[in-house]
Length: 369
Ligand code: SF4
Ligand code: SF4
Image 1 (cartoon, rainbow, N blue to C red):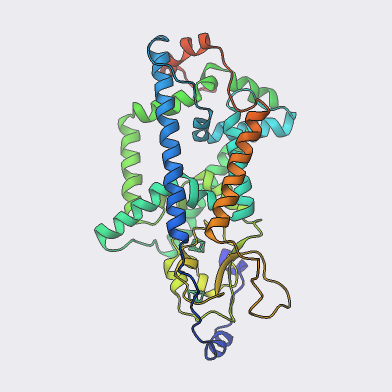
Image 2: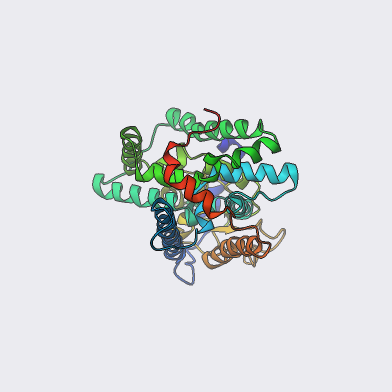
């Protein structure tokens, strides 16, 4: 269905053009993957640092407020996507910035903005789970010498699972009024939702461990198993990314029809047959651009200049890896600094409440249960 929405190229026309096309190599070697991997690792390091701070903060309260104290890092709320979605609805419906877990909302807005401008760049440049998934399928390819691809009849419906999960969360949150959202966030469960998230990983039950092991094994075999089939967060980013003005764009006049781009695409998109990639599966990893041998044949770009000569069609329309990094950093730090400057970054809960709730977080059940 997606493919039918994309523009296809007439094979006849392509081969006719191909006869005339010399191989004009790109003047400088592509470094997009090196830069992307560096950004990924920096973001993993940032998350690791936030994670250590958060664990120390939790342990302080678990020990009755004794020992080494570090302030609670609001950035850890990036791991509360449901709270972010609830708070975003609360903001939209009440016009008020939520007081509990506001950073979760600001981070969600930042990631949505990134998707709106740069396809799902969040998934392949920043998301630690996306980074882990990518490393896992690359390790799997080394172990098994290849990655598997589900047949089309299985791949398409399984890809729909992440939209079903997203639909479930949207329906549940959509049915809640502003007051209901506020009172949920102010329940003991809502106040320490971040601690409960940490405890899920620290005190993992047998069932959760088995599910996690299946996900890891699936990720070794299939490229971006979690992201492609199950991640509702990625599904949301993918839907927003359909509006992105910047896309992978192929210039048929320059293209050599070598097919390297399609073979490199971890989302299995037919990059070599389309003039632009609109698909919600494109995560702007630039792997296709990195392998393209021909100058101006494939770019992550705005629409080409209309009526311009082939040599000027992409002038100042293309975003290289440094520009992508700059836009991501600008949005991420811009939103964070805005929230800090307006005093909406921290969740301000009295110490006495944390002293009472944090040691008993595991005993708190969901208010609806
Ligand atoms: S390889 Fe290209 S088309 Fe495929 S996901 Fe990455 S950027 Fe998108
Ligand atoms: S890598 Fe893709 S876009 Fe580049 S020349 Fe080959 S087929 Fe054309």
